[in-house]
Length: 419
Image 1 (cartoon, rainbow, N blue to C red):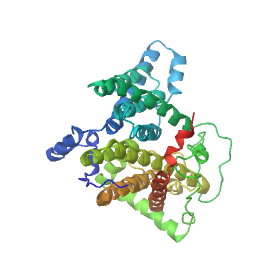
Image 2 (image 1 turned 90 degrees about the vertical axis):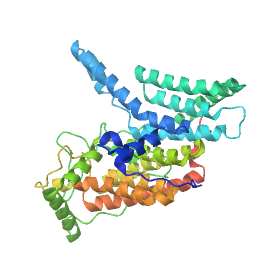
Image 3 (image 1 turned 180 degrees about the vertical axis):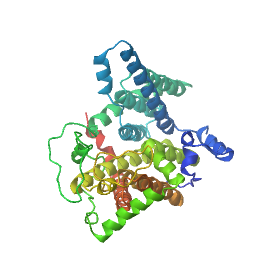
């Protein structure tokens, strides 16, 4: 069911002010959205994720500094071997757990829905973030929500029932969920060689190749919507695409450089969840609607990345700057160590765009504008052809539309069978 309210669309930099300098009008609009008194528990916990990310990073820095000060090489190795959790898993597990809690508490007057959602959110995040400081922060936020749920006559019993329900739901969602994806790790395969084939950085295994065997959330398989091949290496279409990247690299404007750096430096999941939560706040969406949007949004975008890497390692397409060493990347933009086609940024952007456009159809044009900017940022950065971006957007949108339909059919409720 679509949310029957209108989003007051905000450009990307309006919903992500920490990445840009805002004018007074934009700051006021952003503050209004973030200080809304009717923030749902679902959206509140979604918006807490960036803070937990920052706290985890600060804790790692402090631990690394302390270990270095005493020459504890074993501790430094442990820290290096414990990278931050991928945000696509954080947001997807959180969204699906909230979705499960909302649906489990529906029409059950003995249960506080707020307590169930908060407890499910905290349980999932505590499982993901093992750092004691972050866990303490999560516990404080949960305590706040449970205290509010307990206030009033007979609400203590409902809050306790909601807490138990949320914890149970979270454990079952975690048990049912696809295992964590790994972008790095041992690989014993052989990279195909030949004209137009991608090649890895010396001594470095291909990144993300294990994702080709990942279990999706909503798709039937990673290859379900595998796109057709890119333009043949050396063909007129391929040469035209390469020449466009060369021209852009040679004539790159300051604005294009800025956008390339902007999308390269921050995680798209954090950006798009902020876009989504801002929309939900402005609509005064219920917890049920917010949970559905955020669960489908993040699950579909994660599946789009899985489908993207399936295609990348099916075609092994050479990067533009590998095909022509005169192509200079934008400052601070590094060449990812995996094949070019299709663009991962474009795949996730297409999925985010299609899901939000489905639930907020009157504002589809604004979401599409943001998605196209995200995709084009990779061409402007010098690391993708236009056909990478175009096919990535298309793949992400196909995955998203399928994901929306699968949610309708109960795919995200399969956790109920987990014990």
